[in-house]
Amino acid sequence: MKLPKALAFDVFGTVVDWRTGIAEQAAAFLARYMPGTDPGAFADDWRNLYQPAMEECRSGRRPFRLLDALHLETLVQLLERRGIGTAAIGEGELLDLAYAWRRLRPWPDVPPGLAQLRKLFPVVTLSNANIALMIAMNRFNGLEWDAILGAEVSRSYKPTPQAYLASAAALCLDPQDLCLVACHHSDLAAARACGLQTAYVDRPMEYGGARAPDGSYEQAWEWRAGDLLELVRVFTSH
Amino acid sequence: MKLPKALAFDVFGTVVDWRTGIAEQAAAFLARYMPGTDPGAFADDWRNLYQPAMEECRSGRRPFRLLDALHLETLVQLLERRGIGTAAIGEGELLDLAYAWRRLRPWPDVPPGLAQLRKLFPVVTLSNANIALMIAMNRFNGLEWDAILGAEVSRSYKPTPQAYLASAAALCLDPQDLCLVACHHSDLAAARACGLQTAYVDRPMEYGGARAPDGSYEQAWEWRAGDLLELVRVFTSH
Image 1 (tube, chains in turn blue, brown):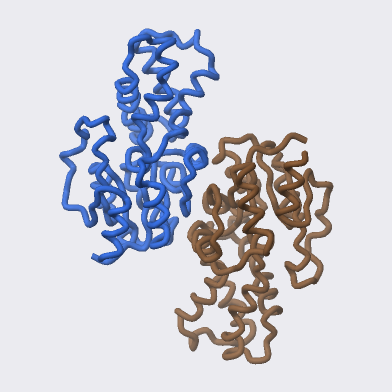
Image 2: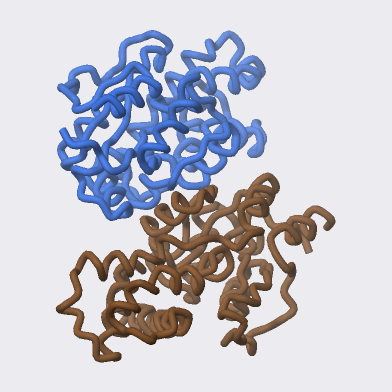
């Protein structure tokens, strides 16, 4: 396998620990409006509304929307399903909680690992996050990328082929010279179907220790590592 | 005037000294194929083909093309006008010279000034450069931005309104909360017409000391500085 010419990163799960971050930021809100709710389970339930919301756009039933807006919509939806009327909650408070997805911390290996990977390759984000969300998150956690690509630049959500192919095109690369780095087998499978190289990074705590829902997509990926520091060694020793 | 919420930078001229960089990189090529040609004048002539090439796309006579491709086209055009048949020149050699625009050095105030401005605001590029060109240039000169916006993200070249408005939209900002930083009065005038704030930075050596061609567009801009370090002081003392 030839080394890739650039790396494109999935972000939620692969780079940042969304479950811990959402749970921590939602805790005070939950204590007030939904006492007794487990914040980790709330984070899981919110995340579970993410794929159906994007699917409405991917299928063409709705036009493309920014992920920030979907986060607010799915929050309202989640609260209403629990019988919490959102009219009584200030719009500012709802928006602040929706923006919790802009304030997520990276796994501990990410800051040093990303910096080392960027010495080897251009490294971009290839996430369903919109650009303003990614900018805010990077400023929150101090991460630097060569560019923010993905959903908003391609106007399509992963795993549609356009999301991967438009990102390779923006880098002026053939798909086989771009490598997706992700902890999700489903994301890697879709990237491989577009001709991209694939690097799996294990994030066993993404779902708080529970099994990932996409295990059936697992394949023999070109590259594989336990974290980004090991991924650096995998590439440099190749 | 309220402080902006983000800054968007013009790049060629405002950030990097294209004339010196192109002249230096073209010198060996010129000595071989066009002996006696002044490298600075060659840089000026090449740059002069830039607006007409983009105008073909802006006017709709041609579809949008990446700036990298326009640089190669205008190089071939320039050589052919001088009677230099490009068939005898290797394609690799032509492409390498076209990519000289990816390898330009910043003015000396830019590395420290940009780092300080990024502590105050998110700072993005709003250039006619394509994403791969900007990534390569940033890696060449070590500059870091919050995002690469501009022509490729908006699929339109400055000074069309879409280039400015799509960049504000990608930042989820109202136009009046985004400030264009540029050394070109024409660029600032177009941004102002879209409702953006404007910051003029003086680059008297952009054309090697010759007068800028767009002096007639000069207006009383919201912000004004001799270089980026002064621009930091202008914002922080406001």
